[in-house]
Length: 125
Image (tube, rainbow, N blue to C red; front, side):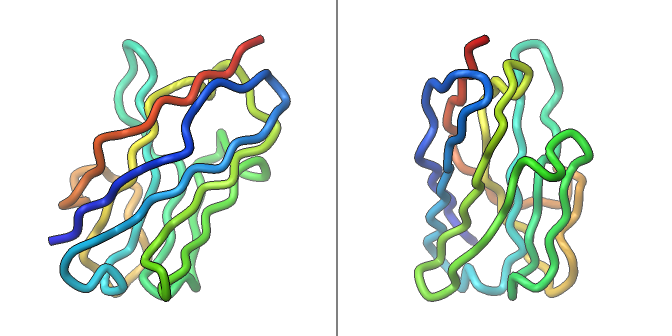
């Protein structure tokens, strides 16, 4: 089991940037694919970006492709999400999640066993 803990959320103006970080503790985080999801008010939780256990495979939702970058540092057991050109519609609670797989990260939240508590990102117009 992996315990993800998110940090780095906050308030930013549209067009600005923000970097989220996820620290994964517990049993062998490097064996897990990691992903970021988000849930806006009244919306379902949606996949944003995922990265394989080695960092060699990354996948993105179309809504953030070209604006967000996911990366991981397995020496520190951290996964970051660099967000640029932020829009008000990016406002949501952002969650870090872990999937025990040697393959590419899944886009489905049902495949992820462990979740963080979330961090709020608010983008003002």
